[in-house]
Length: 322
Image (cartoon, rainbow, N blue to C red; front, side, top):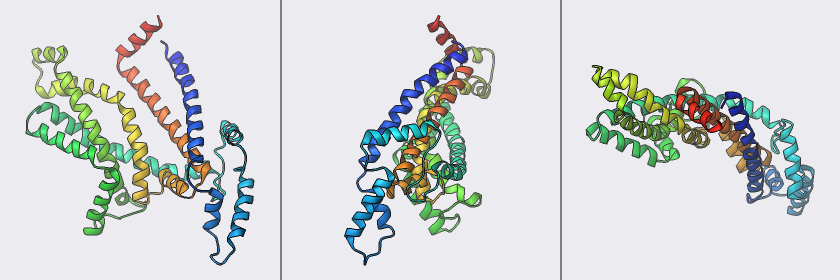
């Protein structure tokens, strides 16, 4: 299957997926308890004012926002709007959502890249050590640490880090985004959980690679243990890990929302949490759709990279089309 045809098929398959995402998020947002107009008015409501005036103002605001229309009409208007590249305007701030995303996206991207670096620095040595020293002390230790990393929620790990390194010892700042020190704790919190998953996958893949014939051939050629691992075992073990990168991306997207909230990191995830608290429907819908597009795009890039790195995949796909 040629690359252009493969891309066309993959892109065509994303259309119904995105349509399903838009319908699902639009429906779920409507089931969130509370009235967005009433929530916005309560934030600036005078305690001495009449409650009946609040109800009247909420009714007028709902009508001006189009929230009094039937579900399918609201959904159709929003679908036409996003099809034209317009994510809408925030109910609360009255600013374009796309502009808000672009202002906050660099912070989220910075945190995500730093977390991926932490993940690689921890998972690769840990996974390799577990495979090389299979069923020995170092293997048991790496597996135990990975199990702890998977089991402990990121919000709990973040609170422990914050108390230990910020409150107790005062080594690192608690919240916000500034210099490099502000990035350390959020990146560690997000990266450790991801590294636990990747380390276990890499360990399993390397153990499978050790049992392959090319490893026996490399040993027969007189290659050292280090050369066998670096030239043959590790490169081949990384390919299966690459295919499971979608799991890592899911954890990265979901974890960034939690970590940004804990550390008051000014990214898109924290913006979405504030929108959920304030019943800001357009922002919630745009956030889920934006993250779905990012997730699908990154998974497509991973599939293309795997197809390029492993010729067997290309041959198999072309044979199926033939």
